Length: 274
Image 1 (cartoon, rainbow, N blue to C red):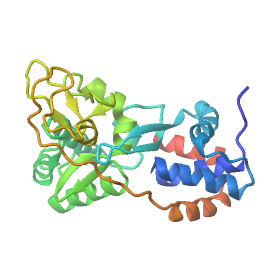
Image 2 (cartoon, one colour):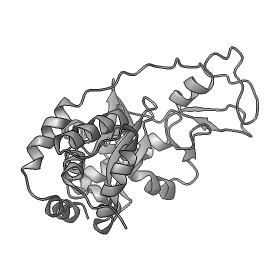
Image 3 (cartoon, helix red, strand yellow):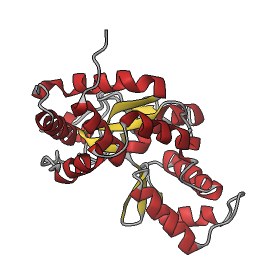
């Protein structure tokens, strides 16, 4: 028999609905905050059990809080995903048809690239040849900013990558659309868009940059973990990431507690994104 959601679970879910995706450290801090606020039992190592209670209630609504890894920093994240649809149409309520086409073309560029990125120049060129309705340069830049703000894309110095949220939500879609291009990281076994590829053509395994840094740490003579050929790429350093504070998320949860009921809010979200 599944446990019923309490106020602590509802507060956690409302924050997930507001943010879409949060890091594992944020999820742990939010879990503690919700339990302490509502006088619920708190156990530091039980955050995933806590989330599983929420997921059991979300199942009839075709939604799920799913865990995945960020290709940027190698950290775990949790994302609230729509299970009713696995392709880009799940974004249809938030974007016009030509904006969705631009996102598809951007994803094509990123997945088909060697390093898992697409330049703003290449994306702008795509916008000029959209079949639905062409976008001008300023319009394209505005749409790209919206994709970043909505956490579908990341952008650094004009280079765009698929965000953690996008990869978690769109993994099945990408496996279906790009069966010959999508690989799993040899180390962590998650889907790998950005990473380093073994230069042995017979091997060709792919490893995320954070996984490369951890796997080859301290090794002066790195060799491919699959074929044992010399690993020719530069080995990045293992980065130390400090835990992020949850002040904004906590205040958001407090504000949302007084809002509409979780079930009615989820029903609204599902109808909009279905």
